[in-house]
Image (cartoon, rainbow, N blue to C red; front, top):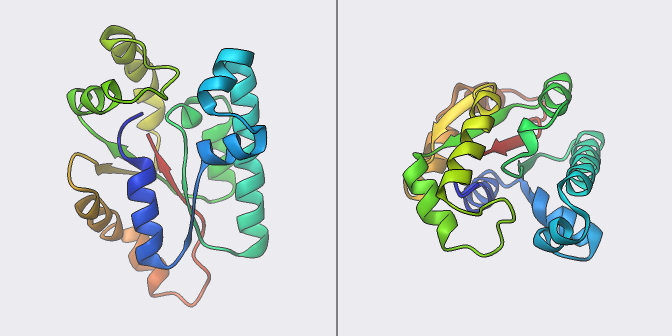
Length: 177
């Protein structure tokens, strides 16, 4: 939450000439209401169910169509049961945009559409609970910089060397945290 997934993801997709999707936006389009409203009306379990369905549908379409995609996951997506395994089974690399907690707090404090951001203590506890899941990502990239610099770091990953030199279609990309 607050690491810049949507901003960095859109910029990365633009530079690669790939499609970009934000999972929270997909959920909102499907539900017809905001993520905040889903949490308020139905609670987190209902949101997580929609999140799982929309992630599976988005990934499934991209794989079936061989459509290169940068997908920004929600901050809690990768910490949900079965999500990391689902992505690994589909050979989809996950990139963790890591930023210091103080930076994340500063960014989130100014946003009103974060249903799980209540205060500093609860945010720190939520982040601490999610960190072991984030650490399972295939790649960790320092996200504490201008988005264009973060994209440069992502494009410098060996992952992109392997696929840009290959004639095969690149896989779907995921951004996490």
